[in-house]
Image (cartoon, rainbow, N blue to C red; front, side):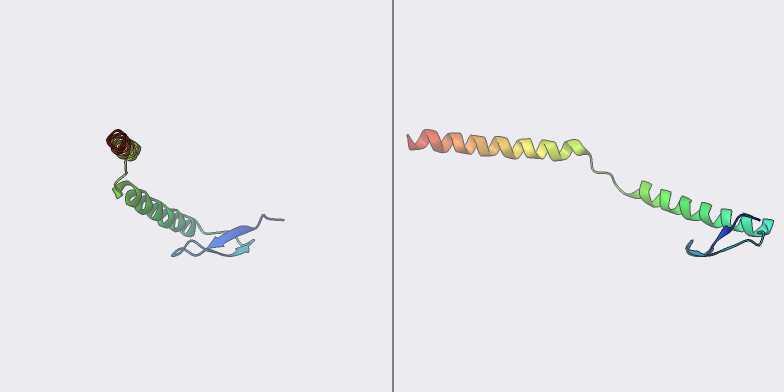
Length: 80
């Protein structure tokens, strides 16, 4: 008994069924091409997004903390 193969929609990539009918070579090549194009598009889209450096958030946190500490120290000295 042959193994069942998954049928995918070439446009969306969704699984639409399973069959024991052998796939044609042209259909296999078409599916590979479609999924390779989608993968490449998603990879390019991810590369185009500007990445936020994690150190900039930490730097801002410490600047705000220093300002608040300075303000608190100034208020404490001026009240006493």
